[in-house]
Length: 302
Image (cartoon, rainbow, N blue to C red; front, side, top):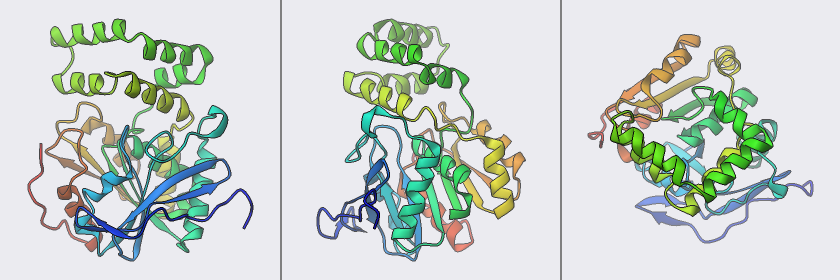
């Protein structure tokens, strides 16, 4: 085994988490990336799963009960989150290195192909994998995924040193930005849900520091819709995008250009929810899709 790769290293014995079989937490390294991973379920389908901002791979225990016998979910802590470190030297995650990591991981578990699942921020990382290594992915489940729409202002700020300085300034001095956000909300120019979402992700120094790390560390991860959908069409990768009717962050309309670009591969599922989707009801819907039918799901929480 090359020296830059390390095998998965168990941290504790197998156990059950929220009633779901969970294998020991482990780590896997390839080149410059090291990620912590835990496995839920024991089914034959291998699913690589990526969580949302400020969360960890433990979130996939919430939707895995209906999937336990169908899938083995490999739930990773993203860089800067949970037990996964940042890249050494403060370098950003490169799309090619991200794909190489999971190609190596799939080889380590002897999986010729895998499915992927990503929620919010994790959806952008899943789209990157579809862009860079479509040959690896058999199907995809994207839950309120970031990355459906390019954000030039985000790239412009995060890509340049002066922009990263502005991010750093915001971490230390958030009051002016918060004043503007509160003013917009007070005059009904910002939806209450979006206001809560933004304030919840910028309300403490710790979460602002994490936001800075994510903004700058993932600044090179901007999947191109044309490239992704071309790969989906060529390889007929069935991709299910779940969007909340009441989501003010990832709005339902954002999925429509993706469906138009690959109508036979990209399937949109509108749910009566906001941005939060990590729950058993969504797991039931995914299980139904894996079985070839919508299935019967419990009522969706708001």
